[in-house]
Image (cartoon, rainbow, N blue to C red; front, side, top):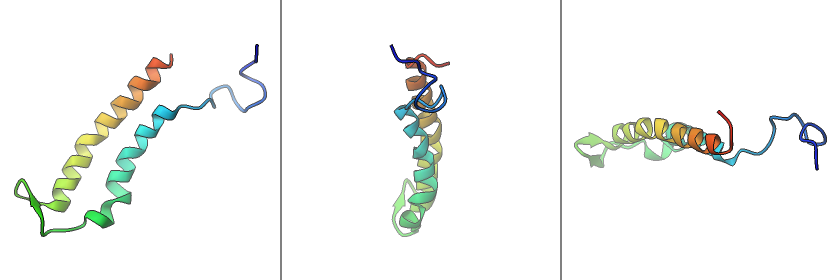
Length: 77
């Protein structure tokens, strides 16, 4: 049986792909912002940029919750 503390970095450096959910707010707020910086299409009476910020703000706690849930399934608290 392999010892987790040797040959591969620190004990906490195992792969945790569920934490990729935490990149979603970054992508929605910063990376995509130059592409959605528009006023002309309106959604629900809001300029598109305001609507995009609203969606990104609501998606942030969702993505954090999904990352936490997946991390807890792996046995972490």
